[in-house]
Length: 492
Image 1 (cartoon, one colour):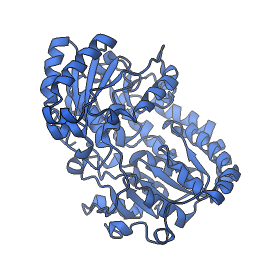
Image 2: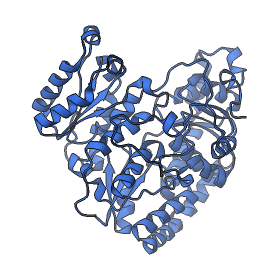
Image 3: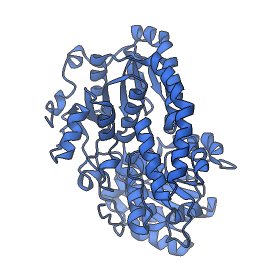
Image 4: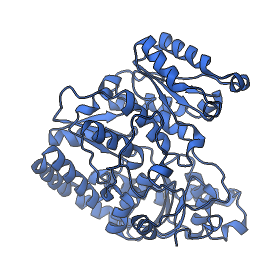
């Protein structure tokens, strides 16, 4: 496992730490091969529409901690797109054991032009005091923005000073958007801050506790783990500061998406000896079996896992076979973040469908645990075969539309909001499911298959919509190779 430097305030970005890239055009098999032999190269985008800002990803790791407050240190506009976390917390909190899901405690220092000249340090001190007095949080996180990074406010000294004064942790998260082209560096920044200053040394190991590093999906792990005599400790949405601070006492850590949780899993193993389940998450039959058996091995529940898998197969395999008959031969295109996007390809293959292409936002050749077993794309290629028309593009919609227009799949699967619009414009039925746990395990394949059948069979709206929709991309662009502005196959 690579050595993480948890003493530095800033996390090392993925480009330098992992060799991650945001530009590639080829096939999935070629990409895995280049990554394995050390020949992976970054495609140089000659044109960019927009990319995701890592501030949002950093804040999403901490804002749904029940008793935390978050201050965005920067212009008010940097906070403008983060209201969605408040909605998500209040809608899903009661499903995850939060007795009274309250409005999120999210603030801004509102840096203005004069502050970029004279500095925003005093504004930050004042904001921290006001937030402490108004909402009485157990921890205050301070997320830095581009403006603050440019003017050089000493956030680390200020947060340390205020922590001593207030008697609670006040923790800087260094996530300026310009630091990295890879949006998921924001996840690393958030978890770096948590690992450095919030998680405490274990007082006593909890032999039935398993950390689940996740977003905000439904509670499938509670149901599964109960059958195995285990309990999930969800990190970080919906946890309390106390629960989170004791994550070091768990017997193991798992993650629903290596793009999200690989950094914290590696940090917990390195600093506190909590073993991370390194094989990728349980999407698809072979990977579900591998994941549960690895969990059983680490938690000494091998017999219980085999009994569990036997029951799952008996209950769900016949239903999967029936759904597969209805979807056999259908084609699909996937767009989303790296690890979860790969997982969706596995689900399609289990249902007898063919993934004819993908637009994935970045690619990590390895994660911080340096284990090949964590490579979800490698598992997909090995278990189900190649994915042609595979693009790595940091949310460049012009590449997605170009590729979609060429392959014209029966359905588009998207992980992030706003992407299904492009399928509809082309008359392609599209499915967006925000619950990343929805397709996990054997039962998840059945759930996802039923939704896919509904979407494909009810295509009248998108067919009619496409007749009237305007596409902003010219005929010239739609006829080009999707990697034209990368210089073709950069890793070919």
